Image 1 (cartoon, helix red, strand yellow):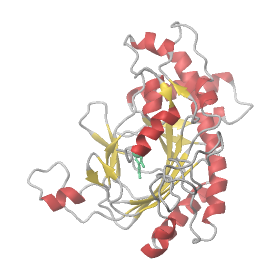
Image 2 (cartoon, helix red, strand yellow; image 1 turned 90 degrees about the vertical axis):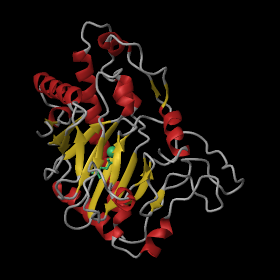
Image 3 (tube, protein in one colour; image 1 turned 45 degrees about the vertical axis):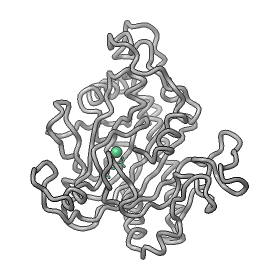
Image 4 (cartoon, protein in one colour; image 1 turned 135 degrees about the vertical axis):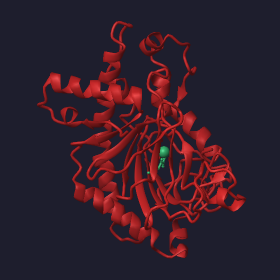
Length: 346
Ligand SMILES: O=C(O)CCC(=O)C(=O)O
Ligand SMILES: [Fe+2]
């Protein structure tokens, strides 16, 4: 079993035909209904750029810990000026479902530019949650420029994907009342994006996660990134070629599908906000990382998120189509995200 592939070029090319856009939208609907995950091709970002992103991540993680800690993430309101979100998190800092994840990571967010900054709880010179500035490493020297350029490119791809998703939802909910097929585009036009650079050492434990009788030490060591759904809109994931690491839970709730990288393609998945908008017609799918392969694995997911102020609530036509009560009463994406930051992303 493998994930479907979506050719997004009709939504990037202004001279594409309506028929080709419809075909892509229908393929997205099938992929999001059945898997919540797909490979994205013909997105316009050169493979050489993707390779450069991955190799810079690898170079950063190879630096001595003391150097990586120079851009450490600090708690919001603290004397270091941290905002609880941006910066480097050493191995074991991340916890999923109460268990330490065996990875290290750096997070960057859209700069706080949509509203006035408020003072952090620690007083003058401290930052409120998410309102800090991005922390860039001094080495590799070209990382900042290359990554900032990449953000611009990947935002264009994200916009094309959510535009296609709007058309897909309008097709799916045809006859259920009016659907604004630009709703996702409008709600992400100031995307409060997150870019994450992750490094995974090979897991030392040889015990498979589901095997019984594993020791406490094995249990602690067994996940590179524990089972989770992504909390936002869509994720555009770039990884190195390591196979077998990223696994996606099939709809049957039991089978883990290997989402091995395809050169040049992104692995795209929908997050909890898309599930909420569609009232569960599309599900944000559980996935996990178990890296027992060779070498040090790196990945760079880009989370194309709603605007901080975007109200995310189930769309009327989706509620009717689903035949279920609204799954959520609605909130802004910012409220949802702040809840995540304040609970340390549990
Ligand atoms: O590294 C990967 O392949 C996936 C990472 C992931 O799922 C996440 O950061 O949300
Ligand atoms: Fe994820």
